[in-house]
Amino acid sequence: MVGGALGCAVAEAGFEVCLLEAREPQRSWPPDEVDLRVSALTRASQHILENLQVWPGMAKRRVSPYTDMRVWDAGGSGRIHFSAAEIGEPDLGHIVENRVIQLALWERLESLPNVTLRYPARVSELQPGDEPAVVLQDGDRLTAKLVVAADGRDSRMRGMANIGTWGWDYDQHAIVATVRPALSHRHTAWQRFMKTGPLALLPIDDGRCSIVWSTSPLQAEALMSLDDAAFCRALTQASEAVLGAIRETGPRGVFPLRLGHAETYICSGLALVGDAAHAIHPLAGQGVNLGFLDAVTLAETVIAAHEAGRRIGSIATLRRYERTRKGPNMAMLGAMDAFKRVFSNEVLPLKLVRNLGLNLADRSGFFKQHLVRRAMGLGGDLPRLAK
Image (cartoon, rainbow, N blue to C red; front, side, top):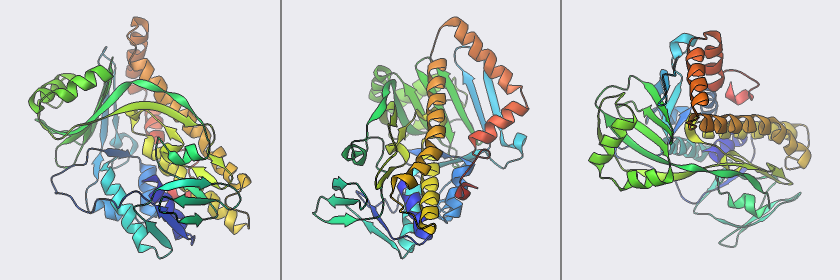
C-alpha cells in the first residue's frame, strides 16, 4: 500500500517509475467476503488517497466509516468515548480492507503512462550509491536515480543495504477475523484493554466487525485451536458482550507483534518507507497511516529536489525526508509502546491512575477534542498531499 502510494505521487509529478511486486493483487472476490487484514485510515490518509485519485476506486468497493470510538479498561471503571459529532466531522475515519486499498492503487498505477509494473519480481542484489541499481532474480539489472524499499517489516532490501534495526518482540500475538455480532455496532469502533492485550472490534458497513485480538502467544494458540462456536463464546466473553453474543466467525489468522525501528531511513540512492522503516503495535491502527505520510513526504522531498536541480538520491536530499519523518514516527512508536505497557500492567496503583486518567480525559472537553483531531491527522505540520 505504501509503495503504491509513493509510486502514484511521483508518477503524477512526471517521474518515470518502475514498481517491483511479488504478485499482481487480487482482482475480485465474493461480495460477502471480508479480507482478514483491514486498516483504520485517518482523515490524513483519506486526503492522500483522494489527492492521488485512488479513493474513488476504494469507495466503489467498500469503505466503512466509523463515527464513534469507545475504549474501556477491563481492570476498572475507566472509559473514554470519542465522537465525530463533538468535533464537527462526519466520521473519525474508515475501516478498509487492505486488498481494496491495494487494488485501487494498482489500478491507478496502471492508468499512468510513465509507470512500469513488474511482477512477479524479486530483488536478489541491491547496489546503492550515486547511480543505484537492483539485480532481479531473473538476471535483469535495473538502474535508477533512487531506489525505495517499501517491502515490509522484515525488509530484505533494508538488510541488503546493511541498515540495522532496534526494537523488541512483544509477548503478544494478534488474532484477526471477521465476526457477526447479535447487536448493531452502530458505526462504532470498540476497544477493551485487558491484562493480556487489547481487543478491538472494528465496524464493517454490512453489520459485521473485523477483530484484532492481541493476547499472549499461549492464549493465541489455544484460541486458534478452538472450533468456531467455542471461539465465538470466548470472544463474547472477552468483549463483555458489548455487542451481544458473537454469532459467527470467518477464517482466523494470527501474527506475532513486534516494535522495530531502522537505525537510519536512508543511504546513498536508497530510502526506506512504511514498515521497512518502522514496525508498531497495532493497538491504535497507526501503522499504515505513518507509512502513507512517509510516502508523500518522500515524494514531495524528491519533487522539490528535482525542481531545484539537485540529485534526488543524494544523502543531502534524502536527509530532509528522514529529518521530517523520523521524529514523528519515533514519538508514535513510543506512545503506542507506553500504552501497551501501561494497560497490560496489573500493579494496583497504576491501574487506579490509568482508570482515573481515562475518566478525566473523557470529561476534559478541549483536550479530548485536540487528541482526536491529532489522531485523525487534522493538525500538525502535514505534507501538502495529506491536506
